[in-house]
Length: 105
Image (tube, rainbow, N blue to C red; front, side, top):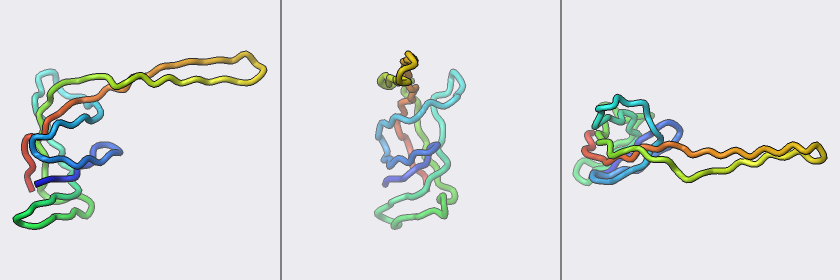
């Protein structure tokens, strides 16, 4: 069984036991699990696929939190000709590593 979930502006295809990296969320310090309730599609061999309009009713994906980490550094350069304006900035996006425990449809 697999599912397609929506998280922010991204969509992920997930299966049970898969480790996934999503954008960081504001969770409690002791939070070990959380639920994705916006499930767009559930593919099941026994019952057939379920397609949402836009989300499947009653479907949810439960994940456990493995930890936080930062992505690779992105450097931004800005420059204006003949004005001696130079700007260099860096950014590292924060991500959350999760493991898919259960898909319910």
